[in-house]
Each structure stands twice: as C-alpha cells, then as structure tokens.
Image (cartoon, rainbow, N blue to C red; front, side, top):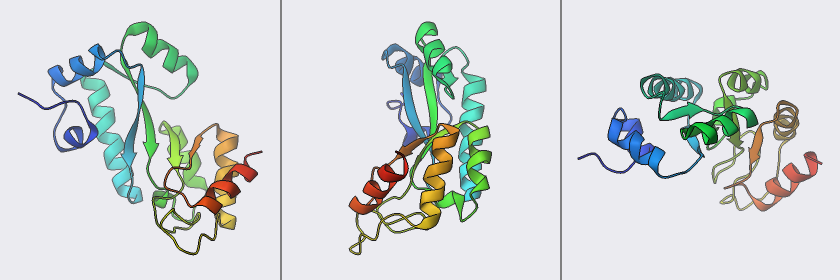
Length: 167
C-alpha cells in the first residue's frame, strides 16, 4: 500500500490514484509544492514531474497560478498545487529568470535557505548582513509580478530589508 501523500514520496515515484484520492478527500484547497530548492536544471526537471502528475490526475489535482485558479480548485474539490521554491539559487544572478519561472507557474520563492546566497543572508549566517542589492532587485521584481516573497529561513536583517523593499 502506498504511503501518505507527501512531496518526498511524490518526487521518488509517480503518484498513485489512491494518493491523489487521499489528498483530494482531505478537504485541503491548495498546497505550496516545493518544486525546487537546487539549481536551474533541477527546477525544470521538478516542474516537469509535477506537470506530468497534473496531466495524469486532472480530476484530483490542478495548478494554481492565480486567485481564480484557487477558487476553481475549491469549487471543483481538487487539490491546488502552488509552485514554490525553497531557496532562490536557481535564479543565479539573472533577474530575468524570475519572469521565466513566473511564466511556468512559480508563485512563491523563498529568498534564502539558512545560508548566504546572492540575494541575502540566511538565518544561520552569523554575519546577518541582510539583503544584497541584487536581492532587493529580486524582491522588487517579485512584487511587480505578484509573486509571494517567502522569508522563511532568511536572516533577521534579510527579512527586515525585504519587508522595507516591499513597502
């Protein structure tokens, strides 16, 4: 018998009808599916996996890229999948990648994951230097696109800086 519906199981194996039924029967309208936490290529490989699952299970799953999509998931009793990244390393230093990922349905990006990256310091960085200039540009562009800026795992100063940029 397959285990519970969770991302780790899903990444290793295709979803079964039973897993999708369990998720659908939970009554949850939508979840933030971590489609990537690594490099550019792995982000697209993971999104490809979820795109396949959406095609295989159209009666149980739906992609959420807007408020209307979220409402439709609720009305149809399907589990909405909101694509999100834990960490923003797949952006590299190319601000244009935000538009690319947005066009593929990514709506949530966590700026850092514990450590320092090109956007800012994570929560485990002792320096707590905050948001970089590039990080500020990322936050500004995410706001323009209507993407959620996830500050989980960010350092205190990175969080404060991202909030200030978002005002």
